[in-house]
Image (cartoon, rainbow, N blue to C red; front, side):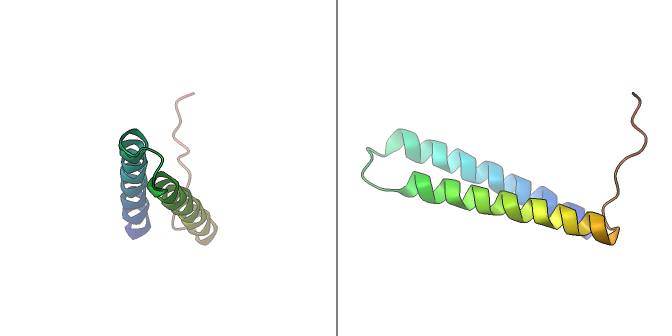
Length: 70
């Protein structure tokens, strides 16, 4: 259960990083590289979330849902 909460928190932080990158893109006049830093953080967090999900799957903490109706 804890790993699921961590992944949800990571997804929220990733969305926040994307939003901040959009704000930096619109407000900065290409004087700073804050947009690049925000997108780098987003990519790093996305990779970490993917690896966390894979480790959770391999250890049995995260299981796929077999109750798909189609």
